[in-house]
Image 1 (tube, one colour):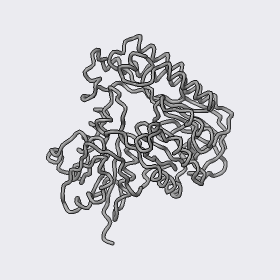
Image 2 (image 1 turned 30 degrees about the horizontal axis):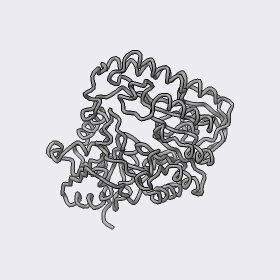
Image 3 (image 1 turned 90 degrees about the vertical axis):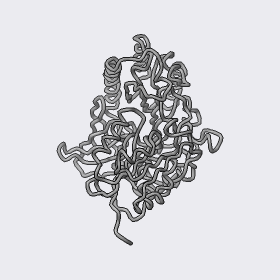
Length: 433
């Protein structure tokens, strides 16, 4: 074997991007993963969902001007080959439809060739063999699909990623088994809409079947689902979640608004009444379920009445976790040219107001857990506070809170323990072994 090629990775944006980065790095041979300063080649996985995300890409390119860059991700669908002239350190541009060819593309780069591999119309999910774990704390993101068929008026994803393409079930199961063998204790399923999984391949929504198969894998681990639209929360899915202790009683259901007219303008298929019915049914079937959602403030036409409806909706749904984002006007979307655009000042004020409201809701929900014994995944030890930290199934990695734990005995990282909850704030919990 010759000298190992030193590489590094910068993965911007969402967990789906990180899952891609891990697969791409795992597909390379004769490489050594090092920090950015020591690397010769850096894989820069980009996000282009919002202008702020695109700005972050260019900031990184300027910072990494002395490195050889392989540009990947959402941004690749928005650029042409002139990028090589503007940023000569870029050696390749690779869209998601070409990730499965990354090994041969990297070989071309090593021969000092530039490669522009951007496919506008991918039709299937192309499998990438291999995975290099970049996450810490015992969890791993598992990508189950690419692209999106929803037509939300504010969103660039269908344009950037193409149509929804499910990954074959046997390949997902294979990755899950390998991850568990590597010591992973939590498998986090990600896609633009996990609930749509399988429809293109199997002519039916197959997430319940996939979850059932994953939960049958031997071992002590959790499996969590992120991003599932409310209309796809079916009785079959709920039954599978109820049947297995391995499946986290947790769902991330992006709702975006609580005003009927704004939801219609957003081209969201579920209206407010159907959403409330679905949440009521879900909580009736799984009383201990934890729910997260995301909302947008300042969408075109969001007057005072519409915002008040959103505030009241937030109180009514009473979710455990909520993320609130200011509407970003993106060229190429239907909402870009809508009348009654809202000022940035009002967007921010409304966002802050919603977050303040949700903090009170989250704090009360966390305090309601006091005295309960919860299965907890230990992720590390903080020397300064002399507390261990980890997560219960209520907390998704990287986006929700943590639990900080007092223990007289030493605890093993990446292992489950029973912890008694003794305190709760707006975001985190305190506990004792």
